[in-house]
Image (cartoon, rainbow, N blue to C red; front, side):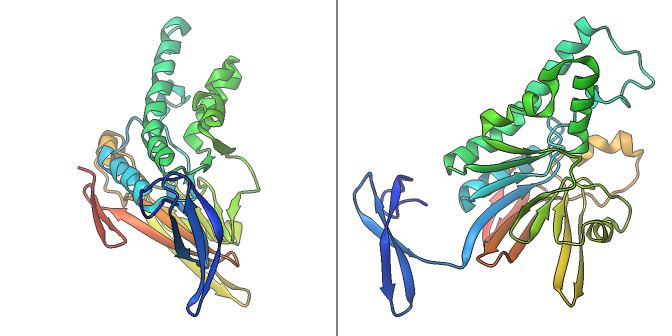
Length: 294
């Protein structure tokens, strides 16, 4: 919340103003000493959620838009769905048909990879810091599991996900990949994702039997079921990586991959509204405002 007069974040609650149109929260700015008010809303929390970025193989235009959106929305919470880094050098698959270099050559390469991912996260964290978003969640992706596997096998704890990405220093709550209990806010769960295939959204809903949002598959998909207990949905949120960098790996095959992120509002009873913001060639609109990351 910013002061409507001087835009300072140093504001305090100053009582309730009752009107015929409803109650308004009175606020006072400790910098300019002026008062202002805003109407109470049923919305109790707002978050921005981002899927697979795969730093340093990210799409910079898409990341620019995410940062602009954070500063525009001023979310109460931020949720990273994992696969934040590519981590190719940590993968056993990478060295399957290659000769692994000796440690005195490999470790500096791995340190450089860690630095690149941290630089990517810094971009987003700088925007979160600007709007004083304190609630931050990091959900480990399967690519981050490669980090943990390497760290445990080689007894190098600094490469564990939580340590390599300095999650405690950054203020993130860490949610490991292999857990039955997911991050849940209100009536919506979050995970990196486990299912693939053409009907992966349906498969995730069948797996969890509650509303869930995930990344992993890099495309946009939603599946909804309604029963006597109400309606549940699953959302696949796309990705924020540079799709063109995977042309060799895809061997020319076309994909349904999309750049996107989500803005989510929660209401007092735990219900929620999901706004999936798709990014097209580095451009999008949010709340009627154009955003250009190019």
